[in-house]
Length: 206
Image (cartoon, rainbow, N blue to C red; front, side, top):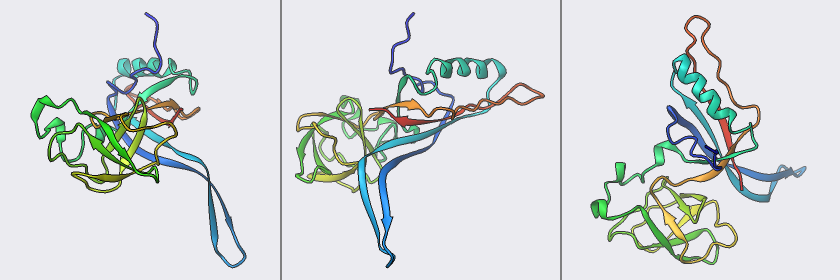
């Protein structure tokens, strides 16, 4: 069977995302008086680190093969931050309306500053919490900056060009597309037992 990219590499990953942060693309310069000037060279991209638990020799080799299929940094996979597969206020999908909510609504409004949005199609009283992750459209991932039950709330990074009102707004397993950071895969096994851990880094691929 042909492998389709982006794959669901981390769907069954036996471990955790130990780091999931924005990497800013900025240029900095400092004057003789000590003032620092910062210039954005592009929107920030998500960067993640994944680490498995200790694996048996057979499972370790299985995951070595899965990562080989990523061809170092050539291929892509759908990535999410494992602690934030559900919103903070609704662990394990305990939505205000129960299972009737799919975890997806739409963007109801966009502020002119392109860093604040309002949600539409969510259950009455739904609360966004600081630290939640939301996915807009197919793969734009954002972190919520303020608590909100109605109206607009800020997100980071700013909205990407082309995003408009009506775009899907997903809070259940929000994700983006990533590729492996070349050379970041480690799968060293213990000499005595053959058991070991898989670790790798990944960067958003747009």
